[in-house]
Amino acid sequence: MIAYKFLAPGAVGPFTGHRWEVDRWVEVDGLDPCLQGIHACRVRDLPIWLAAELWEIELDGDVVEQDWKVVASRGRLTRRIDGWTPLLAERFGRSCARRVRVRYGHLPQLSGFVVDIERFVAHRRIAMAGFAAARAAELAGGPAGYEAERLTQSGWLAAELELGQ
Image (cartoon, rainbow, N blue to C red):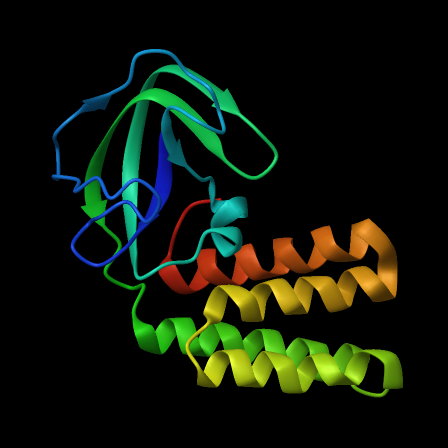
């Protein structure tokens, strides 16, 4: 299975500190989706896991798909997605702010989200900008609003990064 993995600079796992090497298989004994395994995401999950570097990863062995991630017993990085840059991350954050401004900026109880998102973008907290946009959509339209905003975000990222859905 081909999936994606966000990593810290230098291909380092943000939670484990593991330094990945391209084309080198990493295997785990046992699989527990929250505790043990090779964690990755599908295109639709990208906005949830934003970090400095985006990589394509091949997953193999046992693979468990969950709502916001996939976990496998084996994985290897195949290539870095060079299109994911700080500039593109900023553009993503600004697109989130623009959508919230257009959709909810006229609603007093939600208009503050626009300022929050713009502040997150200015401080390069892009994942928080995406979350705040999804949260505004959820407050306006319930869980379906949250899901729709996250799908819009993943579609934006897929188009900009030229990733298959």
